[in-house]
Amino acid sequence: MSADPRDTSELREQIALNQQAIDRLNRDLARKSDEIQIIQQISSEITSTLDLDEVLGIVLRAMDTVLGFAHSMILLKDLGDDILRVAATRGYVDQAAGAQVRLGEGVIGVVGERRRMMRIGNIGASMRYLRSVRARMEAAGEVAPAEAPAAALPGLADVQSQLALPLTVKDRLVGVLAVESQTPNAFDELDEILLRIVGNQAATAIDNARTYQMVEQLGRLKRFFSPQLADLIIRGGADDPLKTHRREVTVVFLDLRGFTAFAETSEPEELMGVLHEYHAEMGRLILAHEGTLERFTGDGMMIFFNDPLPMPDAAERAVRMAVTMRDRAAELSVRWRRKGYELDLGIGIAKGFATIGAIGFEGRWDYGAIGTVTNLAARLCGEAKPGQILISPRVLLEVEHLLEVEELGLLTVKGLARPVRPLNVVRLRDPV
Amino acid sequence: MQGVIPSHVVTCSHDGTPNASAISQVYYVDPDHVALSHQFFNKTKRNIEENPRAVVWVVNPETFESWDLELEFVRSETSGSVFEVMEMQIEAIASMVGMKGIFKLRAADIFRVISAAKAVGERIPPAEIPAPR
Image (tube, rainbow over all chains, first blue to last red; front, side, top):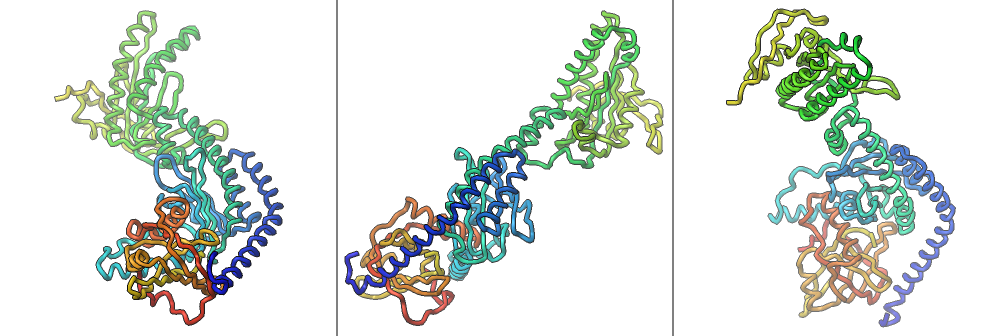
């Protein structure tokens, strides 16, 4: 400073004050070294679990009880989109779970987009000022009048201070950790440092927990769906399909006529050989038509369409799969017959609403569909003669233009008030 | 320096005509320097080119103490950590009032602090101060 000492006296005073502030900071830091020990303890706690909710809970509890940040939240970014979703909060009356922020929107969104920490202590005043600038620009016709009001951001009403930290693992954004306050200038440099220490640990722990969760879920889903579909469900961030829901599905039942007799008279090795071949061939066709295999029971299989992924052409897929299966089974039968096995495929197809979801108990879950529609499909399958594909009239309605069918006699089905008149699929019509 | 918004800056053209204007950010760089946000091409910017001296008036939001800083323009930054920190804050606020892309930081103007004095005199509320043009 090379100015008149009278001019600089005030500044010197300010510098002295600054020095005092720095000393105070250092004292705080010494006091907070206890807290840093606690933070170390927290970080070992964080890394000791692979449960995502537990990790989030530990981090936010530490924010509050150790660092004294009463209002905190963690938002996570899903793979493949640019949205941050609130995954956990602490210190809010309204838990705001599921609230979301687009990258680039608000303090949290900008922190996520730039992957840089932000500390801001005058949000209310800044917004008031900018709104007045906007109003003047609107009046002068320099900007269009405000469109829809900006989406409400999660967090405190009338927030003044925010400290937001991007959670990154190897430059990849996992989410954002934010603390906030209704007091202006509530956070200082020390808070930044402390948040960063916990945040870095948290990012890795959260990422590990999410990866673990995803692998677990993928494993679970792959048991029921094609690998591609399982992957899609995971990446889509869609609702967990294993949760019970109700949906209209087309259900296909198939089994082998003559299988019971064959099982009683043949050697186990022969039996398993035939089943293996049959399952492999039918399984391939189920995957090719993107059906959901609900279960195997010996020679029986139940497949449905339009769940978990919606398919506008569910009935058509079901029928095309059935016809292809019948052709393939006919080829297999020729070979089996040479070995003396009398086995023929029969198929039943019905359409209707079913209750679908995980059925079972801890340790043994299946993805199942329950409803009259499954009874009807099973009954039609039971009625089918060798090589027949019996469909219900509701299925025919959707695929009539594709098929040549023959009508059969009335059939009563348990659970249905009125008998149904099934139709046998003779063949697919040649494409015109 | 994350103080009451806006702060006010007074500049002078080469012929001595004064101009006062509101400014959204005064950012503490180091004990000798501050950065002022430059968002619009306005009279302040023109005056600084003609006459690098300015006085900025900042208010501590906790104590409402106000200070006049006598400044001299050093350089204009459009990258680097000072620029980025200021720009991020402006973008965050702008996105919340539907001004994203309209209200943005063009440059962080770095000024050397020549002197600082506790300001005296009556203050008018920010609402009555004209927006930067």
